[in-house]
Length: 364
Image (cartoon, rainbow, N blue to C red):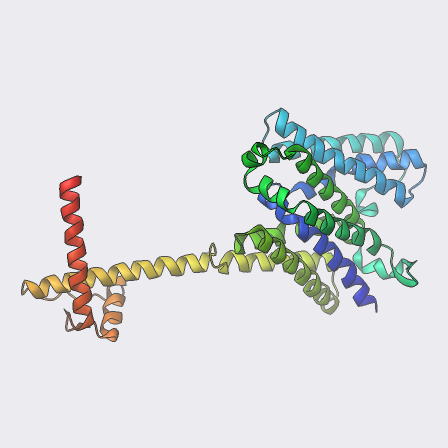
């Protein structure tokens, strides 16, 4: 069915990007796909000039060469000129895009060579262009995406340890004699191949989103690179599945819905990630503030009881008031006086604070 063919193309593209996305996020180069999508225009024009037609094969070859050029030039500027990675990418892709516009004006003014018509494909149209493969009819756009997916899996498995060391400790990688520059250039080449392979099938916006967003979600949720890659792949697949189904139900663009779905996953991770999420951090901060208020209240109440002073005044609509209510519910406080286990906790707190005051007086 057409729906499954669309989903297969979208899912393979998402998985291919999800595998190498964490490598880019860990190196702070998540927008490399955006730079490649703008920098391939000269390659499209040169592919047209050398072939004399808009044959997709030659234009894809030209786009791949331009994508590799974007990656290598940005890396060269970052290493040799000392530019920031984002600044180097910005300089390279804007320069190549400008060169591409000039080449269009010179060689193909009357030919529609806009990257949008050549590389920014419509995944909804994938079932209309079929080829025979192993005796079965499959969408033609699925072939380069599957090749990119297989290539990413094989290279990632072969270079897992090396890329891991380069991502987390480049100084150690250099000290151990690893060819860091070659490894990094190989990663950039793999990103370029993946981006160009997926552009035709699902469009540049989705490729940029799938390279950056699932990996960012994984970075928020995980602390190990292995789990990061797994979470990135799962988020990419779920974005493809939910986005395709939603697009069919709402009769809208599949890549757009996939990118939107991945954005919702990112929003959920930002809010709910156990270690770095906004809500868990607020809960932890609130719990610590409440614990401090409860300990202060118990210690103050115990001091008042020992010195026969009136119990601390009860406050409402404040953290201290909430601490009082919780202490009374637990039975640690009765009528402003510590009771039972609350009294033992208060005495231990006063003893610890006395020791800290003595330490501060003697040493500070």
